[in-house]
Amino acid sequence: MKNFLSEFPSFDLLNREMKGISFPEYREANGHIHTPYSFSAFTALDTAFKMAVAEKIAVLGINDFYVTDGYHAFHEGCLTNKIFPLFNIEFIGLLKEEQKKGIRINDPENPGRIYFSGKGLDYPFQVGWIQRRQLRTVKKESQDQIKAIITKLNRFIEHENPALKLSYATIKKEYAHELVRERHIAKAFRELVITTYHSEEEQLHFLENLYGGKKSKTGLSNYAALENEIRSNLLKSGGAAFVKEDENSFLELKKIIKIIIKAGGIPCYPVLLDDPSGRCTEFESDPEKLYNSLKHFGIECIELIPGRNDSAILKNFVEFFHKKGFIITFGTEHNTPEMLPLTVTSRGSKPLDESLKKIAWEGACVIAAHQYLRADGRQGYVLPDGTHSTEQMRELINLGQLVIEYFINKYQNEAGN
Image (cartoon, rainbow, N blue to C red):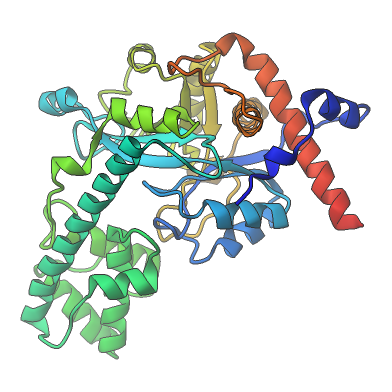
């Protein structure tokens, strides 16, 4: 495996070769999608690439939970489809003091639980043996919990139909890659019900019995909505098959940040921001306090999934952190069964204004520059002690844009020959 950036020319040669070529102010970028290597709306990566080409997405970022197994296929697919790849990863951690105080971070249901990303990791992926062991441990703990959920769910299924049973091995083989997640269970369970019972009446009767007599609100025709309902009623907290995660399933934030830096990446906080009622979590409710908290951890990069946010709240929040010199990226996640466009919009599919698109483009350019420098054996944006060279932000934006535009011109020219 070889990173295409390792064969890119030096900065001086890049400048020379791109001289006289005008660049657009921004291009469409999506820095956060999940793939089938964790859980994704995409059953195959090719679907994501076809959508990205159709929607003129110039930069796309893989962002799977715990694993980088999809990097090679993502790298090759991006090159084939002339899309600049960003190599990212996502973790679920725990802030124990915040958990004790009942403070929600960026998980609206679980105080203390924190989702956290690494941006622009080295490809091929590599970390020290301590970090490899930590990753193996959290992956094993997550799969132990999944197996316990399947066992518990099977006990409830048996009461209704002793002939039916779910298997971890089968779910992994048919629906997942390295990791099985709750959403894989929900999908496998939905298909089990539909293939076992032929009439809609029988299917609903079976499901609603497992729901404890609660009526289905989604019905059977919308598969994505039904899988979300199954997950909510059976697998999440309060559900019949819910199994609480062991604290060993979560790494401390400092350890997560260390893994990301060791892997050559930029620590990045995923912002939840407002829910449909306009409320934020306790950790995010005051931008100034959030800024100070992130700086305390040495974090100067944030990402948002604007599709879940009000456009006005999003704009005010992004402009606040942009003025603070943060790297800011946007994505769509695609971490649920719903198949949405890859073009980033705010809540209600409202298009982003040009100022937000430019800010997100600058963030994508910084990460691209970081990957280019790392592939050349240089440090990139994150320094060895974890601090950041923010005074070089404009240089990195310019370099990243140069690298992306060179990539686009290079691969378009090769395709034309």
